Image (cartoon, helix red, strand yellow):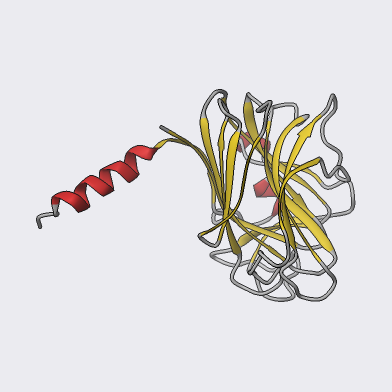
Length: 230
């Protein structure tokens, strides 16, 4: 089969854009919480000190942590889950993931942080008690200690309820795409394929090497990918 020159050029350009995939997680190969956080396999680290739990779950409206599926997502309740990847500095970084709420009145995020988890960026989604679209914020964190569960960082961009079109509690999971240029500090956020926010951090954080998931009540996460771009 022959490929038209323009189509071939577009395909090669798209492949060249992603220089390296640093982390990829689909939550497909775990049977229980212990397998997710088994350190001997270089997997995730868990901090569920706020009484939460994590598990691979079949995402339905009222999922609990004991429900399993062949194609699950990760669920976190009131705690952190994090995993390391090769550190990047002065690079163009892209974080893509899917996320959804299981209950209202909650805030949760996916973020890129340094190894100590003292500085980084996060995409935070909060929603009211009733099923609503909620508000999405791009947060910046920088401190001397690992971020506590209650820390909401500093807002550097906001996608307000009028611009957020994905219901916070109804399937499918919302698709997020965050791009950061560590040289210029410029960043962009798209949700469900639509550009929603952009801005510039005047002092971009370097040595990003950790994906952090923050769960609240019942947060679902899936298809997490961290990659650099040319």
